[in-house]
Image (cartoon, rainbow over all chains, first blue to last red; front, side, top):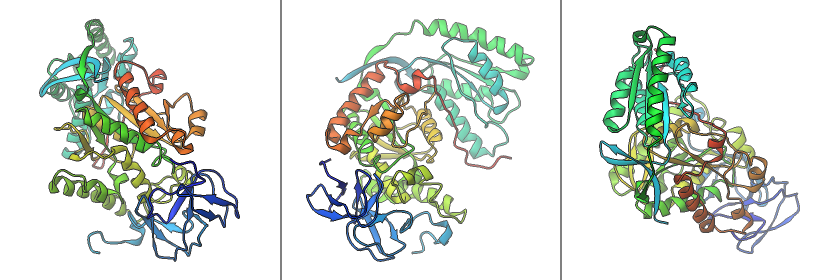
Length: 100
Length: 391
């Protein structure tokens, strides 16, 4: 993987994985050379939003859906359990499989 | 390197090749655990398992226990096997022994019943005397040079973090692809950790039937979890996974399946079922690491690649487990348990193919006899996947 501050797996992804602990306000370089400013602290290995994501929108990583935003997520913010939920295996939402 | 050295065992389907030569002592039922352990402790070099199954099980559940025990005993890494039963159990020792002999006809198997022996002390004596003769015969078994197509590799991940899907898992996938190209077999496991990634695996299936079966086993795993009316998160991903940066099961799954490389998917197996084809296959196992490894070894895997980011210490009594760490800090912190560091992929100092090639070479060294960290520590966990309630 190219030396960088945040690793985006595919060009379609909405998030990138930061390779070290990041403070709010830090400028980060992606593998592509693009830059993004963190707007919250982000622990190493956690995800940074690469665009503004509205609550309810699907979020892509590895080029596939990893869940849906449970709150509005500004570009540059930490993306984790506080603002991203899974859409699969949600017995709590009593979704009937095969009925969608 | 296109060959390895292993112990050739005659088998119902031809020949299978062990990369270890263990005497295994195994209870057919929970009631025989203590006796089996005492037999093994009297036999230098013997390994043993214990479990909580074998009785008070409905027929499909008992059949899965029997298939798992017999498959484990028939694994080519087992040079000889002693099966200990109580005498009145559902999964009888003689049925386990007969199935091992059917699967692996050249293997010495000794079966004993505690009730028929006249209690545990007499049973232990019978087991120890039989085991001593087995060990003497096993000590004269020799390794022979064999093609890599005789290797069956199990793929496992546990204690994953955000790096697992970016470093260790794709490197293992690269090594798995190399083994498949050499004619060998790789087993990808853990149906629950394909939830959200099954579309990618199904697209690689060699036929619509295989793809549909893959989707079906993943759906069954998801429906089973959902029937409890809770969010799967918390159970999977775990708290540790989440601390490591994984947010949802879909995210974990997309990283998990990278262990399977890019090879076509040839078939989907039941828990502890033997592959019928050489190449990449999926086994329907739970996300529970020990049950999943036990299932793959019962299906014939001689070695396991086990990737981790948080760190894990799991071993298997009869098969070497090669720990591949996703990041260098955990590798350094848990050097006693980790075999290979894939963390250099994150820093960019080594590529996925470079680490994958190193893993492939390590697999062949381990196949030829090099011990893994979990073997050095004598670690050997065992767990049977239960599919029915206790009766």
